[in-house]
Length: 200
Image 1 (cartoon, helix red, strand yellow):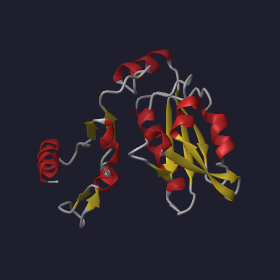
Image 2 (image 1 turned 60 degrees about the vertical axis):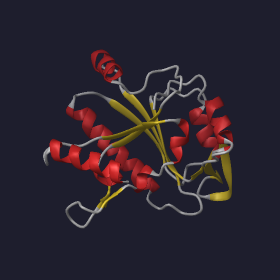
Image 3 (image 1 turned 90 degrees about the vertical axis):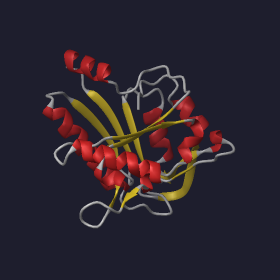
């Protein structure tokens, strides 16, 4: 998109090569359908790259009421002052059609967050569920009223624009990638996280 490219080029030039450029997008709920993961910079050195691979990227939905603030500077400062660990749940669910990088992804997320927190002398605790252990029931148990600050899911999902409540995540029924693939609809996810401490 030309406007997006103009803003990105301008921000990249201002940041300089030694600074990390963070990309943050904000918009209305239907904006969730925008495939930001596929934004591509064909001007970058080395023949081009997907922006999500070279820059931290986040998106926010406007007009949504939340019960807990997100991962804000105030929240992080409070963790640091109380020497409380950030609690992170990382879930990899490589169902059909296969996305072979999901298990690598959760380990990479752990590595990046751990390094950032170590640089600030802050503790962080991670719980990882790899694809071979990841089942519909094991994820349900982890999510019900969970005490994690961040839950990151890497795997297949379905978004239903006409009925967002029918959107879902996919999990194997049995450990070791066995049994049928089971859907976890957004309504169930909302119910499981209702009394949780999840902020992101």
